[in-house]
Length: 287
Length: 335
Image (cartoon, rainbow over all chains, first blue to last red; front, side):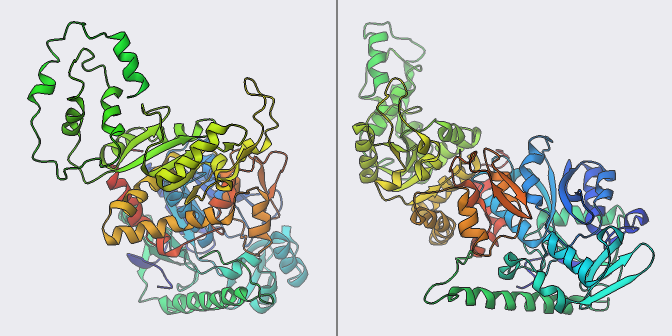
């Protein structure tokens, strides 16, 4: 159950080398949105676009493949994508909206569909919700501290950031690599992440992340009927290369382990919150 | 006897020639064997009495007034026992009722299959608040107006479930800002959320609550009152957070995001509140909501919609099945 309900799980990467050139891992999100756009399954997608400062994303509604390409790659900081979901159906006039988000953001989307109090004409227009695996997130200032103070790299010099194999890595265009162990980054984790009980975006249509797959590939969970239909069409149209998840190296075992670790740790946090003070506790959002 | 029927009698006096085309109606209608339950509406006689008058255009010259209730019974679809829903209008802008109506054909499906709208000043010809299963109360109570106070008390007496429909009923919303002085009742200046005067069972905040959310709550209320054990369980689980909101209090503000989400270490910066706010009072600053309190109308939508105000996994994990079930109940494709 730590991996949520899913219809199938594969290891995949985008077939388009142009997408892979600047994607975080297998380019799944960009390629799947691009396919859905071309097929008319979505009219546009809320993605993490470029903001004012380096590696500070801001949510944008991408309605072309070029705009999707602009938004490739992971920025390890907060991008409030859900804030644009209603706007996408209003100012942008989209009838079929795609959205990519962390597990908590996908939870927000599902709540907006089941309890749509302030979300008129939004829920039924969400045509594709892609979730990304997420262990924790950092405030922008936290990310700056990690990159500039701990890794000694200017934000504007960084060409890619990555978390994997127990390390936070920053790459520069000139080829330098700085790495720090995740132990050092833990304290910059934003507080809201400490109560999160979802690692692999259990409520998404399709969720994806690098964990479990070899470098340059991504693990993909296809979860809902909408996701299954779309994924089937994309595979048929040759938009993805796939391998069986059983055949690749770290495999589902690692995904399960990390998901279990996260959920166990955060469930413990939740339990501790209940008796945080003296005879007084902190609020539990799940009851 | 509704207002409309009295009017009709004045407009179409009894000596008006009977339209021959309309004549077969009351006579030929057979007692339907298909109607599953004898007492379609066991509640007050006002219900069947008033409904035929609501569509007088069919045969305005019909003399046999007593026969009309029978006709209505035969016209009704042989569906499982409907629930009765009333819309009680306190001090509000009717936007919540418009939102209910904005389900378009979904509203007809709702009224055909699941609920009788047995009280609604705008849409149904009933003057006194009858017994009902679910009262959707829109607007806050003007305590300077004895009628409003009496009406909200009667609503509590007569309704099994009282739903605060929209933020005025739940939290006061814009009526919190009233200072009186409006024509033609300048002395009306004090407005209270209904929860300050009566016990409220379910909150459905937002200004206005979306048509979809009202539809969902109506369907869930039907399942809770008429469903199988399994359906009752689902409906209870679905409605629980909205019942908890009703217990939480009658004050709301964008500040709730600060007090009960950010200050409690729960905000993860998803931006839901920004999209929800009907007056665009919220922006994201440092990855967290920032509330412009000059703009905030105290509707409480941001907090209610926030995934960290409540998130019930038992319901949310079934989002796909529940969504499909509601679509199916509503005849699919009604959006």
